[in-house]
Amino acid sequence: MKAESLRKDWNAGPSPGDPEEFAREKASAARRASEGMIALDAAQKNDALERIAAELRRSASDILAANARDMEEGRRAGLGSKLDRLLLSEARIDAICNEIGEVTALEDPVGQVIDERTRPNGLHVQRVRAPLGVVGMIYEARPNVTVDATVLCLKSGNAVVLKGGSDALHSNRAIVAAIRRALEVSAIPADAVQLLDSSDRAVTGAFLRLRGTIDVIIPRGGQDLIRFVVENSLVPVIETGASVVHAYVDARVNVPQAVELVHNGKTRRVSICNALDTLLIHRDVLEAVGRPLAQRLKESEPPVEVRADERAYPVFAGVLPADQVKRADPGVDYDTEFLDYVMAVRTVDSLDEALEHIRRHSLKHTEAVYTEDAAVAERFLREVDAACVMHNASTQFTDGNQFGLGAEIGISTQRLHVRGPFALEGLTTMKWLVRGDGQTRP
Image (cartoon, rainbow, N blue to C red; front, side, top):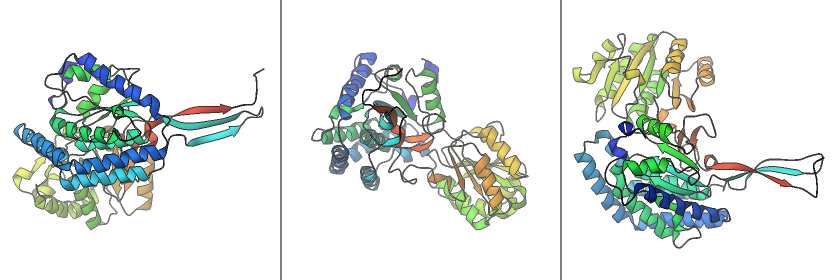
């Protein structure tokens, strides 16, 4: 394990007892629980999810008290804009519980027939969806992920082992305690949800080596976390989250609409993976779009710092105060997932130049084009290689709930198994069912 690549926010502090044994016992309990879950029907799983939502609402005061403790420690640690993703409130807990209701209403994927055929010899062959088994989630300070991952895993017939960041340790303990209380009076065993409530790096390492006990690891967080998991896990990994999100503003554009789309993509929430990082502006509309956009960014609270190329710099510097605009460092700023009130800007001469920039710098998460030219839009949608490609919509719509999935386990940036926001279907594998009547193979 490469200890030098570990980040303090998700690896620090002591472990209870032996780290290897601690991780193995939790995962083994989840494995045992998963073995009986395949027999559960949709009604039993939905009942468990409804009980979880009710218990989270009943336990809201305890959860908020735990979160307040995390927030205070986060402020002392200087988390800055990352505090937003850590924060829970009554409204956020209510929204989380409402999302549980949306997942409950979704069709159960387990047992769904993908395709079927009858062979000439009479064999009837089906492919059906089946649970992955035990899902391991490793994520940073997002306590909402604790709930999202749990309910999606349970609904799809999987047990889950949660490894949250140390910044949300108290919140996650309170949330998981409420979830397990709800499961104790449901058909799903409480051991189907396990929390590795230690931030010891040795526990993290042991967790990633549990091949055969854990079936898949899903990291959710920044580039450092994802890179660490991919480089160190012996368990198969579904990569999620890391992004450098672009929006290209074309020469033929509805200027007020483009300004609003860019402003929303950058400022609605800066600490999430679909927040806009780099704006590419066609030279013909640099002034028309740049000046009103700069005014909006100036008035934002907090204001957004712009890192602009040589052509864009005087446009933004003519509106923004000196401390809010800098000259871009092309070797750094165009490859940075800011997760903060910072946006890089580059001027381009054509759609081709925008596409080439995206090819060089994209992490294949979300890319957007803002144009009224249908041919430009269709070419961008066709040629950009990313999990989500958008036309005239805010990049912040890349979200499982917004796509009608109820919630999301993450946003996959890889090609194998799943891509983009995924939820129930992405948490299943497949198996073949073959029904015969005594056929033998000649």
